[in-house]
Image (cartoon, rainbow over all chains, first blue to last red; front, side, top):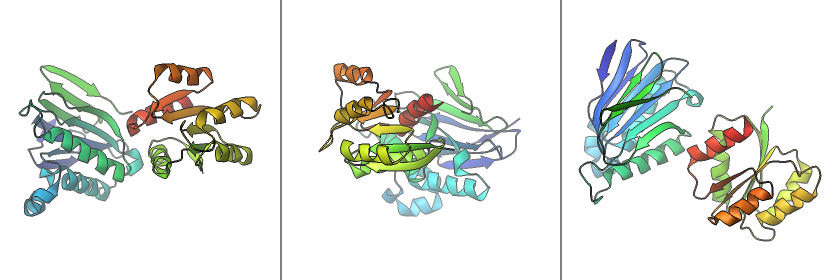
Length: 162
Length: 124
């Protein structure tokens, strides 16, 4: 089994059943995994901020930093690889308030709001979502099975395909 | 053959939102019919074969409760499942709706995933 690490502001895509995509320490960042069970094709993105308009130049270089450009870019890559929208299984985690306990910036909440809008615009619903709160999460996606794991506070839960 | 649905709401945005949620929910939907109040909905129900109705309560001309009462009076429509989507929060009124035969209740603003889950449970 190979672990493909999705760094901050990064995206990985794979159709190798031996791979597991993993991203660590999601705080206010969002981790989004999308999987096509027929092709056994999956991708995961780790986005930091909601909207690319705050720094359009950076968004061109690092589109996965932002939820709007990151998700759209990931979807484009998945569709180019043959994914069908009707089969897409979307799992989401993160968007918490770990460094913002007073909720001043609400980055996590705004990340999730933008994500919702983009998914809606693209005609996609979420399968599993664990967002908000004030904990850090590590998520992984098994390419062979589509199983989505969320590890937080020493506990691991997983979501299978619907 | 898919389920024919009737979406009853005086807000066009809500009608479109319900239709879009249904269309992306992995449900087998046949025809979409729309009505802006209970009166138009009853005309649609007379003119088309409808498998399930999604209806608001507060609408002009004929509200959702009057529409459901009229459906219950008509033998052919009395068993057609109705899902109410409303801003109504009073538990007493929601229970009263269920006593009238309403199969499920969703509060506005609804989350599309929750909407899809409720409808799937109802249809499967």
